[in-house]
Amino acid sequence: MRKLVLFFLIVAFMGYAVCSTEAAGVYDDLNPVVLKGADNAGIGAAATLFGELVVKNVEEITGGKFTIEYYPNGVQGNDQELQGLMLAGDLDFVICQTAQTVTFVPEVAIFDLPMVFAKYSASAIDTALNKSGFTESMNKAYQTKGMYCLRFLQGGTFRETTSNKPVRAIEDFNGLKIRTMENANHMAFWSVMGASPTPLPWSEVYISLQQGLIEAQENATDTCWGNKLHDVQKYLILTRHILYCNQFLVNSGKFDSLDPVYQTAFKEAVNKAAEVIEAQLTEIDATSRNNLVNGGMELIEFEASFVDEVLQKAASVYESIGKQIGEDLIKSLQDELTAADK
Image (cartoon, rainbow, N blue to C red; front, side, top):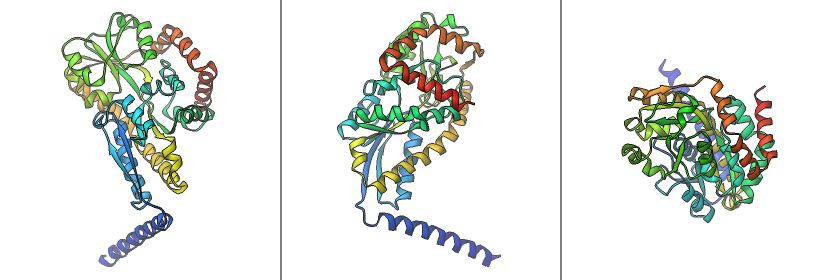
């Protein structure tokens, strides 16, 4: 038995040695590379898990020749600040949700369309975002602004609403004082819903809820749980209004300056990490939701007809975004989602 165990240990070691040697051989003649990346996500949120796994992957793939200094949880600034730092070359990549990218890449406003993803599976959404003609159109938009999007990370989960006021029907949004991000399309959406949107920096949300300056906010459940919003909010309302989607954005000049071998390794590290995290997102969402409920929040869900009710109210938002980015881009996304869902 001991001989058999020893045999397997030797085989495993030889396999590891071969992989390490192969990696070393490919990267031997290249200079070491160190990139800097950051996110502004909450502790334990998908963006941070994604970034940390990319760091691990790229180092393993390249045998330690390509490493990353990673700054999670907003230590380098908020999402807009991080993207500004990336475009200025002070950071090399950023992982962030889509709303704060609209300032830099107007076409990203397509992700602000209310309920556009609400009826589709994670698989269909992944195909539409990462493996389609729509992907190519978006890549061109990012590239003209000095960045590449290496991956859209999502798992068919959504930004939800928390509130200190019960919202059980669409009419209950009337007058709701809700915090939004600094995004005109988000504010327009909540306005047509009858709510009173108030843009606030994320750092001010908890105390504003605590003091009653606002009644509600909207975010992914892992962010709500990680920031202990159950201590200052009574209701978790499953509105599914905006896809919980993170972008992996990299400075295009920095990426282009990398040796092609490093570029391939970087993309491989990102895609491998995405596959792992995406497989966990449904469970992360469910666990975070349960934690919030167990922490004292009441869960409110809507009938399937709620989506169409919201779409009817949000028609003017679709029209406005269509004028900003072009109806053709919207149609491209909708067509790709429909095709992928068959």
